[in-house]
Amino acid sequence: MANELDELNANVNPAGRDVNVIEKQLPVKTTSSEVFMCVYLPWLLILPGLILWFMRMSARNYFLQLQQKLQAEASQIDNYLEQRVVILQNVAALVNKAVDLDKDVMKTVAAFRGGVNISETNRNQIAEQLNGGFARLFPQVEAYPELKAHAAIADAMQQNSYLQKEITAARGLYNDTVMQWNSCIYELPARKIVAANSGYTTRIPFTASAEMKAQARGVFF
Image (cartoon, rainbow, N blue to C red):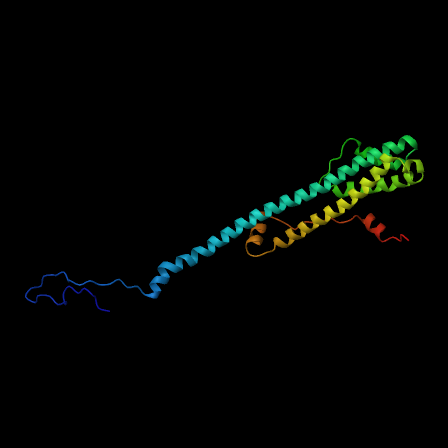
């Protein structure tokens, strides 16, 4: 393509060889490739990076919120367990005044007498100890009609039954959130990248003890 402004061969005065200003206005035109390279290509390169960055920030915040949700749900289970500890202590004290309680029951109560410190590692163990304590306490109460009719004991037993149901429901919520966590850490692209970079692992849901599973398989009727 020739130079639009050709200082030597354009229509100028042939008498001289002076360089002249060409009195001509040229419009600015762009090609489609120039527009793509200068306008769209930078955005096409930047946008994916920005989108991925926002996705990773969103994924990081999501995991932080999910961890707080897991902690809150675990704490709710602990609250119910602590309430059952108090009930067991109160009922055992009332029954012990009337009859000689089984030594195993008193050992269970004594284990919690100094206060209960529930953590991620001993939560299930404490739950099983409480179940065992109440399982041995019930026959004692059933054997003495006057104890069974005691208003405070009857109320405590009712509260215990209610708390057992609440613990089961709370464990269900906890397990649902664990399943949500375990699914999300494998979601590509952002969540899996964040999970891998943060060293996250799958979480273990609540599981019943071997003793409880064996009891569930027993014959009741």
